[in-house]
Amino acid sequence: MTDVASGFLESTVRTATPLLFAALGETVVERSGVINIALEGSIICGALGGAVAASHAGAGTSWIVAGISGMVLAILLAVFVVVLRSDQIITGTAITLLGLGLTGALYRQIYGPSGAALTIATMPAASIPFLSGIPIIGRAFFSQPAAAYLVYVLIPIMSWWMYRTHSGLALRAIGENPAAAVAAGIRAARIQFAAILFGGLMGGVAGGFLVIAQAGTFSEGMSAGRGFIAIAIVVLGRWRPAGVAIAALVFGATTALQYLFQTMGWNLPYQLFLALPYLLTLLALAGIAGRAHAPASLGKWIAND
Amino acid sequence: MIDLATLTLVSDMLVRATPLILAGLAVAFAFQAGVLNIGAEGQLLIGAASATAIALAATPLLGRAVILFSLTGGAAAGALWALIAAELRRRYQVLEVISTIMLNFVAIFLVGFLVRGPLQEPTHVYPQTLELPPQARLPLLIPGTRLHAGFAIAIITCITGWWILRHTAAGFRLRVVGANPDAARMAGRINIEKTARNVFLISGALAGLAGAIEIHGVTFALYENLSPGYGYTAIAVALLAALNPLLVLITGIFFGALETLASALQRDAGIPATLVSVLEAAIILLVLAVQSIRSRRVPRTAVSET
Image (tube, rainbow over the protein chains, first blue to last red):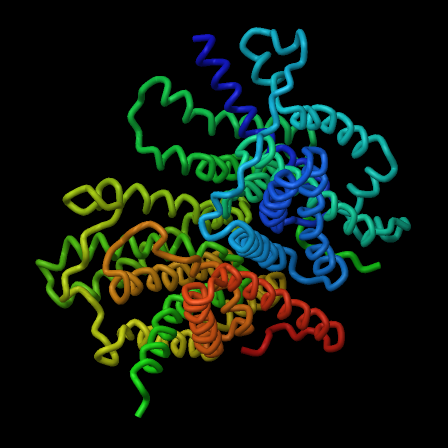
């Protein structure tokens, strides 16, 4: 029983971590009133960037390259949304399409049609002494690839920044009432631009995590909708870093049911498990979307200073 | 006299364009009304799956007439699949962009389940259905090529769609809701919720029809990876056409030609065909950039010209 429970939890955290990186970035972006549909594209770019860098350079470099790859794609979104004031959702969809197509083409060009050549050593788990010895939860939460611990640090820092600093207040003000924010002298366009870049960076790191810490290789379309799921997680977490972390874990847990059902020997079609994260996202959005308070100007307003 | 190679190439392009035109029309209708249906891909797959099921079950009973039933059935199934997103938006304010993308993934896995489960061919070796019997296949427009009657259906649908949007009260309501929902509610007393739901249904039906026609005219069987992303290319088709159904016909053929050439280039020159989606994305972004620069010079009218 302990084995099943800790296996279930490990699987939960494994699914939740990359989603959480992306969702924390998206939280900041959405707080600035922008919905980043290009997140999926940033994740896949981060994955390819991370994979290529990891096969040529060290682990540290590959994380930086992954983050920058995601951010480069986000610059495009920022230019269109903040500068050109294009429709956020159509622009984001196009940029995701661009990211998926570009990574697929580059990957085939560099590594051949099958692309089997690319394998990298995955980042080993770094157990935290003592904490990882806690029964059941220890291994799941404290015996992770070192990069995963970054989110543990990031959640409290982001909460503090968003609610306890001037710049955090400015960010939230733009998302809630852009006209008032601009009247108060907040440089809305600049902050939105920066928020989108941060979202891209985190998306890239999420993609890098998939490759460097988990899969050890790149495959076309391996982001598999995680960008969209991360956007849903932000809604479920009600646009607060701690809430988003819990939502990511709940999401990971439901996906990990697959593991549980297999251990129990239940014979259900495997496609059902594959579809489960997406079905769950729909159910969760239906359950919470009406009651959650979204940033008032989300997706609507475009900076005009 | 056109030589055979050219005829084959051109007809292949038009065959490829057929689902793009219909799915592009689906996206154009939705976007006109401000419904951001990114789910044409899923609706197309559900339409294809339903049409296959109907055609396989009912051909012995209905003979040639089965095509009519399975095309209608495919369209209806696509509409129902879109209705899920419509209801999620109406009742729970779930963004249709996210719900339709989630439903695309669910549709892919559903097709995967069907072709390995209830609809799998009797020997249970290949992950696909039986092939449609000859009388359930769409007739060819030009004998000796692959060009099927579905292309004619796509043309007729585009013209009908243009006429509805431009010359009927329903089409006007739809465009007003898309251009300015508040004005539509206040001045026009238009039921926005009902209009949006109907738009979801029409859009889903068009995408479902695209899938059904693909089954009856091209693949003759249901399998995974049936669609190389028609539903996503459809967004580029619709936007490049400025959401005008008549122009969708032209941009659909343009992308059909592009994708046909791209697969030829991949085969002969090893250039990755995924570059087409990069080009599609670039075109969408270019259209958006031009629009934004234009809208700064000219004030926007309430209802855009179609």
